[in-house]
Image (cartoon, rainbow, N blue to C red):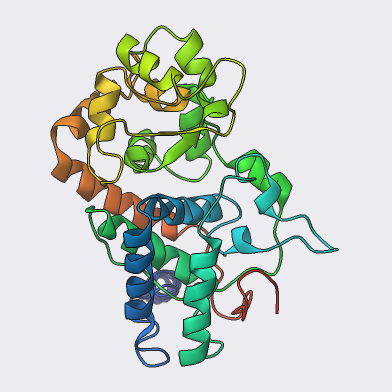
Length: 318
């Protein structure tokens, strides 16, 4: 009996230690001693970039999302193609679409001057996403730090893992479930579409062919998205307050004013209708749930410890 007791205590101690190591992988104070001005440097640069162009806030948030959904939050999305791999920038969901690389380059350059070889590109992406939301009037959250950067990237992984704007609800739920998210978390993360813009080619089918769309809204969008031309013409994802991070996106869905097919799928007689209704009537609930989901997303398979590297240039491996 005594042996079993000691054995159980020993096993529990090992389990507790493993859990402690896992939870300690990322820490909000990771750069407290090695680069104390890291967070303020990122915040200042993001604030300036968003003030200069409000759309940049959505672009930086999207960069983090498209990074984390492909092999984890490892800044692989920032890598240019090399002779040994084709990177993620040319994947269908990213090509001629992802923006903000120059802002990340500027931040990285400042941090390399202040604390060389210390702050990872993956951490810059995570913090910049949070600061972008705040700059647009949205919620804040504590970002765990200590991610390291990947040494490779995969166009195929990006093609397969990033959800499509043409997906039905069931496919959206599956896509997010594959990354460990619940249907509710999928809905709240989709709320990032309360800011930013989309190209005509991704919503033409909705505004010309779908019936669950407000007719006046469809008519107004058609003026900038002809049926056979203008693939790159942009329209705001949130028709009401596109330069603010608020809950108007969900109000739009309730009124059948979702721009993308995948947006309106969240409120189309399916299992997520009630969640959309909740967020449409309570911005505080949306903010709290969004912040929690963003923390969870930032924890997707980070490289830590001796894995990966701290890139000197976010676009290329050291």
